[in-house]
Image 1 (spheres, each protein chain N blue to C red):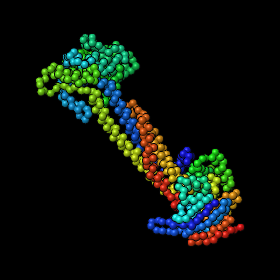
Image 2: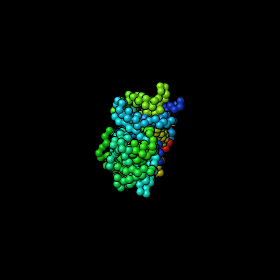
Image 3: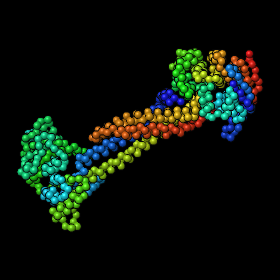
Image 4: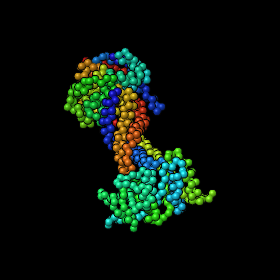
Length: 407
Length: 225
Ligand SMILES: Nc1ncnc2c1ncn2[C@@H]1O[C@H](COP(=O)(O)OP(=O)(O)O)[C@@H](O)[C@H]1O
Ligand SMILES: [Mg+2]
C-alpha cells in the first residue's frame, strides 16, 4: 500500500468529519498544551533559581546576627542580637583559613532628598569587600574603597533603581544628596543585582561605607549580616566551623550556650528551594500527562465510533484488495493524524502559554525544545496506542459480514 | 475460467446453523456473461461472495483458472481480489468523503504498483460510463444510477479478469437500470467475464447464460442466445 496516498485519503476522511476530528484532536491538544506549558514554565522557574544561585555564589556564607529558623522553606528571625561587630569581620578575615573576603553590613530605611525630589529607599552600609562578594562593580563613577571606610567619608553609591528614580538619564556624579539629615556626595552608580527570590528589587538601594553608616548616620556599633566568601566549596565546612568558634569566643558564649548568630549557606537554601520546585514541577507534569491520557481516550472513543459507522467501508476496502494489514495501517494512520493534529495545536498553545507564564513571572522564557519534541512524540504515541485496539478490530472484520452491515 | 465443485455454505451464528448452499456445481467460461437467478434470501449474495473470495465455502472446491482458491492465504486472496476481480454492489459502496475520481482510484491504493497513467485510465473509465464531467463531485451529489456507474468504473480500474455484480440494479429506477445494463453489455462486448446475480428475469435475460438456483442448488442452466 502506498502510504502517501493512504494518508491523503485518511486526511480527506478526517476533514470530512470536521467536528469529530476537531473534538478528538482538541482532547490531545489540551494534554500536549498542558505538558508543554507546565514543563516549560517549571523549567524556566528552575533556571531562574539556578541563575540566582550562581549570582549568590556557591561559595558564600552569611552570618546573621540572631537566631533564625527555617519556616516553610524561608528563614525567619526568632531572636535578634547586637553582638555581631565589625571586629568579628576583621578576625574572620585574619584568622580563618580559606576565607577570601568578608564584610559586614546593616541596613536602614531612609528618605533621600535631592533638590526637591524625595524618595524612600534602603540605605545599605557595607564594607568595600561586600561589593566584591556581591560581584557588584561601578557602572558610573567609582565604588568606595578602604580609605573611604577609614575616613568615614561622606560619600554614597546609588543602586541603579535609585539613580533612575532621582536622576533619570542625568549625571548623578558629585551631586550632594541628603540621606535622612546627613549630606552625602554621590561618587558612583553600582551595577544592577536584579531581584532576590521574593522578587524584591535589590537595586532600590543606596550604599554607604559601613563606618559612615554606623558612626555618622545611625550611631550603632553592631552588624546585621556578615558576608563571607570562601575560596571554594570544599573550604566551606571547615571555614564554617572556624567562624563559629571565633564568633563564640568573641561573643563570650559559654560552653552549652546557644549561638547568638546563624550561619547560612545561601546556595544550600536555594538548592532546597530548587528541590521543592522540582518536586512541584514533576507533580504538574504528571497531572498534565494525565490530561494527555484523557486525550488518548478521546481518540479511542472516536476511532471506535468511526469503526462502527464504517464497517461497510472496511468491507468495501477488503473487497477491492486491502489486506488485514492495510486496514490496520489505515486506522492507525487516522488515529495518529488525529493525535498529531492535536499535538501541533497543543504545541502552539503550550508555547504561547509558557511564554505568558514566564513573562508574567519575570522569568526568562525558555522554549523547552526537548519537552516539545517529547510531547510531540507522546501525542503521536498516544494516537498509536489508543488507535491500535480500534485498528485491530477493524482489520479483523470479516469482509462479507461487514458488507452486509446496515448503512 | 471458474469452476465450482460441490460448494456448500452453512452459516453458524450464535450457535444456530443456517445452511444456505447445498452443493453448487457450475462452470463459467472466459468471456462469458452469466446471470445467476434466484429469489431474495436464497443465497445469491452468499454465492457471489464466495466467487469473489470474500467468503469461503464450508465445503467444496472453487477453481479459478485451475487454481484451488480454498487453499490460498488471506493476503493472497486480497491480492487476487485486487488484481483479478471487480465488484459492483447493490448499494454502490462509495466513500462519501472523497471525490468520484478518488473513489475510482481507490483500488490502486492496494495494488502492488501504482501505474503512472492511473489518472488517465480513471478518467477514461469515467468517460465510458458517462461521468466525464462529474469527476470532482462527491458521490452524494450524484443520483443512484450515477453512483453505480462510478462503482463500475472503480471495479474496472485494475482491469480485472472477472466482474462480479450483486443486484447492480436492485436500487435503481428502470431508466438508470437500463443505463447500467447497457454499460455491462459494452464491457462484455470488449471481452470481459461478467457474473451478475439478480432475482429479476429482465436483468438475467441480458446475459448469455442464466443459471437458476432453487433450494440452494442449481436448478437449471440455459443459454439465452
Ligand atoms: N452471517 C450470516 N449468518 C446467518 N445467516 C446468514 C448470514 N448471512 C446471510 N444469512 C442468511 O443466508 C440466507 C441467504 O442470504 P443471501 O446470500 O444474502 O441471500 P440473497 O442475496 O439471495 O438475498 C438468508 O436467509 C440470510 O438470512
Ligand atoms: Mg443479496
